[in-house]
Image 1 (cartoon, helix red, strand yellow):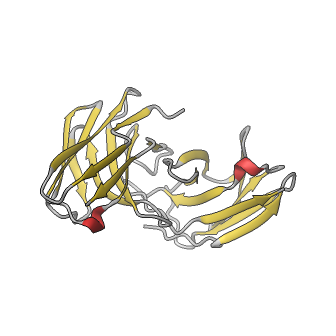
Image 2: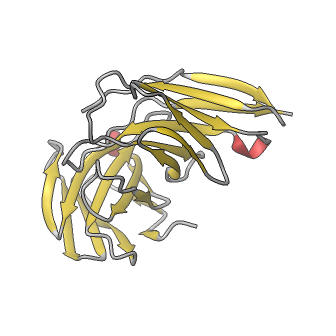
Length: 110
Length: 115
């Protein structure tokens, strides 16, 4: 299983862009990179998923360099409601296991 | 809004009680999961069912007993739990095996307190 490493916490202000980088040095060829958001007392919510280069949806962008050993989740113009824990996960190859790392607590201030 | 529904949202049980947590999904997913999450910790995988068969048991104590009656339902039977088992229990589902771009969808969780 590819292990992931993320910063423990990040602080930001409303309207700023937040970039969270996740390291996954031993990612396997068939692994995908998925990011989840979790608010207190709720289940994790899917944000975005990618394999390589760049993926963008209405919520975020995911940047993956050619070597795929890291990825960066970009949250544009955050608001107070974006305060949450963000998890980077790497999909296991031919397996159902998906292990959560410690996650990054993002705090957005007014 | 999540399409994975968990009941009850809150459960308080004594150490000698028998209770069950229930989970339902109608997305046609063939894999269903139980995760346990303690406060300020990441979710930890407990069990995975694939096509209604137990595929993964992460060395979970036998006081937790999963059951998958059909492809839409997943139960977690609880018996003789300990106070340290108090946690948020998350159910999730996915189309099929991961690593192929499939996404796991989580329910809102069931808060369990063992007294």
